[in-house]
Length: 102
Image 1 (tube, one colour):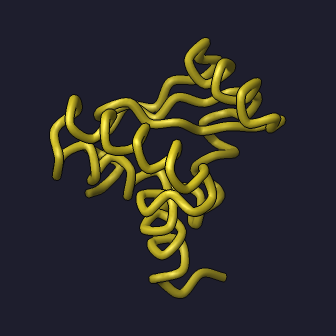
Image 2 (cartoon, one colour):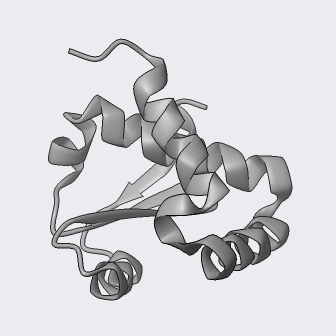
């Protein structure tokens, strides 16, 4: 997955809701092929390669499972194991560390 295949939306109400739920100041959240940003700019997001790799992994997960199945599985994982231990978040964190970043 590369950035040419996704949209990036700044000032997203969807990401604002996620920020409130997670108690985070800055948030990026993926829905299908769009990365929604709250309280960060596209240029700030793109400057953080680990963050980009994390969100691109979620785009890949949407492709792998389809939007309905992925949304359902993500929700079930979060209920059972919590956000941090959710297997989809673990896989995205692994993607952050898979490349050598400066």
